[in-house]
Image (cartoon, rainbow, N blue to C red; front, side, top):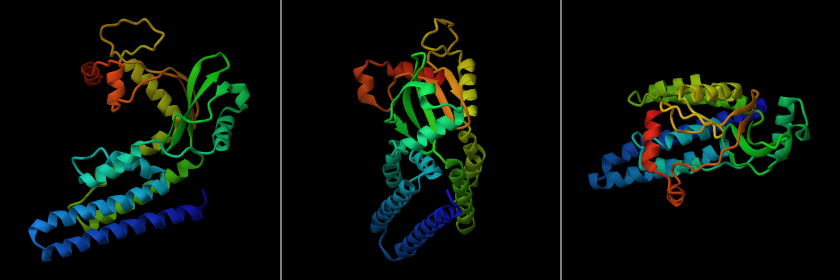
Length: 275
């Protein structure tokens, strides 16, 4: 992504921040002239209006903003319902990146052609997120795997987005001291860049498996102290591509499927708590 596009991203983000800020300041002024019975409705409309504005911008910008929006959609303890209801749409998969980009990244990272790496590669991704997308594939030895491929140029975008987010949070803390989100954004600035190196994710996956005493789906380990979950084997990793053993599963919020397969939800809660 060129400097021009990065500059345009910054302009769009800061423009939206100013628009939302001025909208709320306007509501603060207007509420002085309306009855208390109407103030609640006025604020709810403002929240809905600005939540939709922010959602539209996040979808347009992608990058770090999607990840931040997903996080915000889980914070019902902090944000008004309008933001939770709108931003939870970001939990769904994003539009996929072009296959040419995906193939190019894989081949560049491993220094081999697709035919030298895979017996089969499913072009339609299982999911597309803010940093990468995931495809099913079959290795030359017949093993089913998933291939996580980082979006081309996303590192530059993420680092720029972090700078912009930090600037906005600093500005809000200066203008409205009661809204100081610096601890949160400082943690993001520290941790988010780590997600851009899939070697670290591979290392963390192995560490979690070891710490929890987990087994893989081919293992007969019956250690009573282990946590009863399956962790996929790491097959191969580079900075931008991660190949893992394929494991089918059900999302924890897919209650219909959990019921259909007779999943013991109490058991899930217990194992998560133990972990």
